[in-house]
Image (cartoon, rainbow over all chains, first blue to last red; front, side, top):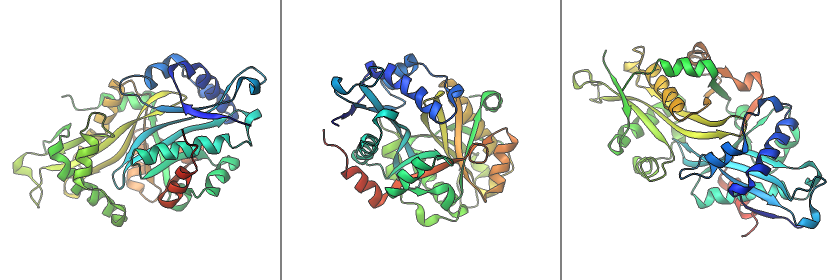
Amino acid sequence: MDFRVRASTKEDCRDISRMIMELAVYENMPDQVKISHEELERDGFCQNPFFECLVAEVPEEHKSKDGHTVVGYALYFYTYSTWRGRCIYLEDLYVMQEFRGKGIGKSLLSKVAAVGKEKQCARLNLSVLDWNTPSRDFYAAKGAQDLTDSEGWHFIRFDGKNLDSLANEAPKD
Amino acid sequence: MDFRVRASTKEDCRDISRMIMELAVYENMPDQVKISHEELERDGFCQNPFFECLVAEVPEEHKSKDGHTVVGYALYFYTYSTWRGRCIYLEDLYVMQEFRGKGIGKSLLSKVAAVGKEKQCARLNLSVLDWNTPSRDFYAAKGAQDLTDSEGWHFIRFDGKNLDSLANEAPKD
């Protein structure tokens, strides 16, 4: 099937927002999603965007059961390693169920890697849930290393009240 | 001891570069450091910086054995959660050995949290090595969650030849 991978525009935010929810449902955490397409428009399409996003689009004649032509997305941003410098981080990679197995996910991933290389990034990082074997196999098959397994890196997070109280302890300027 | 936490300037990059190496030695991976102060100056002090950095400074009369007054740093950048929106990521938090136990690390961490709140970030994220019990306890004591333990998130990375071959498979525009 022919499809096209392109940079997203502000007009894609409703489709991206829809697919963010579909992905959260797949990850069994739909109640975690607190973001709206307005926030995506504000944060992704401003002067100094917090993220960039690619979308996969199929021709009108191949639209989804529900009439969608934007059927996948890859949302990423730039991070920094104090050992290696510029890196690119793939936050989400998603292809709608009925469009899987056609190379769309692979094209989105490769394109993110190419964008990273253009920006002189030394690494493409991402994270997966340990039970998500299909994704872990997909990345491993392409040569990715699991640094949690090999080096013992753990994700740590402050949010909600913990983040507030931490911030309140900050020295005043 | 009195100390001051302030935003870094281009002139701090030599000190930051020195401490990046000290931290890598502590983490038993000094050979991993491939970054120079010139790269830090280029990537952190450009129009669209890849990172921001706070430094902790002591008065001249309390300078280190080797004559340093910049004795700690916190390097961070902004990331994005498709569930919660803007986040801040603490890449490195470091205080020189001879200045530990004086609340400098805590002040740097709190200040990063405060910067995140100012920017409407919902989360402060970071990562630690599993053997680094002092750091894990430090963050846990302040209410951080370990998402690798609680939800099973793993770090995945493409770099070197794997990243190159992935990028080379990208659909051409």
